[in-house]
Amino acid sequence: MVGNPVQAARVYNSRGVDELVFLDIFASEQKRKLNLKIVAEIIKECYMPVAIGGGISSIDDINNLLKIGADKVVIKTMALSDIKFVKEAVHFFGGQCICIAVDAYRGSEGYLVYNKLGKNILLRDFIKSIEDCEVGELVLTSVDNDGMREGFDLELINEVCRTTRIPVIAVGGGGNMQHYNDLFSKTPIEAVGSASIFHFTQFTPLDIKKEIASLGRPVRL
Amino acid sequence: MVAIIDYGMGNVASVQKALNHLNVESAITANHALIKAAEYILLPGVGSFMQGMKNLKERGLDTLLTEEVMHKKKNFMGICLGMQMIMQQGTEPELNLGLGWIEGSVEKFNMPELRIPHMGWNEINVINDTYYKAVENKDFYFIHSYHVVPLDPQVIAATVNYGSNVVASIQKDNIFAMQFHPEKSQVSGLTVLKAYFS
Image (cartoon, rainbow over all chains, first blue to last red; front, top):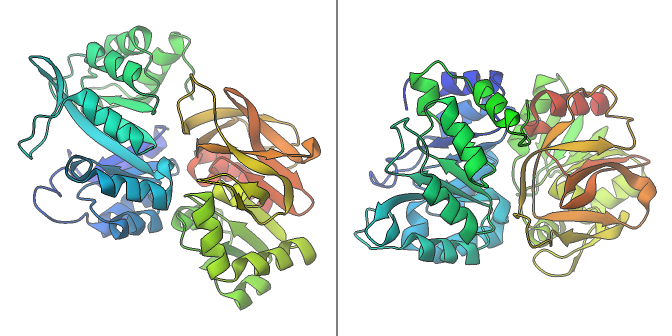
């Protein structure tokens, strides 16, 4: 995160992004909850869907976020440590509010799930367990490519798109228009998430949308 | 004044925020007296049909809303789950009864190559443009795994293509409902809300 998140949200809203995902990536590790006040202020700026994540570990956490206007919540750590919670959340709120975030990296025998629990988890197995929970969406981040702005991990994305029917948002690696061109012409992905490209280059969300549209893929302009 | 029904299911704050933006007065409430006094009733909703109906019943809102909307003909807007629950029955997660204001049911998307839920922006085909006349860009934000199947095609105000053409909006007498989220559909959504509440 670079700068003031509320201001960033305002800009993204004015630039017509389709959706905003706000993640407090240190909440779980630091054993604390999201700052609901800041989250509410971010949501106030947005007239498009907002997904919020960070340290979510109870039904109450989810309810608190939905109450202040979040449309979906993003869960990562709990999906690794207690899959039953994910099932419970889906049962209570419906799968469309529950988004699972997974960080994948290349291992010697295939993609693995990056985690701080010291576990060796095959991406394929993890996705299967998530699919059984009937969650609404998977935010798939390539650990190897994230923040590098050198392109997406197309092999990873193709493999995941083949493996699951859940909507997938590919995240990690977008740095110039060719990357998005490759992504949408060489994989069946239907959604991409980006951040670094907007913070560190001159490209705007509209640039990317126009690139996608030029490929004949449906996108809201 | 719009009574935004608070039954413990989801994004009442976003809906109110959108109405505030349009200078439409609203109150998030489950209070029967307040609901009776309101000019409009808005039923939002995010979550499962069964849980939604359970929550409405617990607050006596199923009978109250039916009285206000079906008998007193109060202006009603249903959004997402709020549109699904007005049907006779739903199937999420299993067969159960809805408010029964519109004949028909709620079915799960069921085509093998389709990703579920239908999540994202999609363009609607307007059939009844009473409240859609001023909308330029017909892209709205959808997020649902189930869709309504009304028995009477006359009530269909708009459809959207996802796998096949499914109902995106219903309009019948004082009832106006939509599967998409107008409060999440930026300018287009705000335009529809403005058309209904002013």
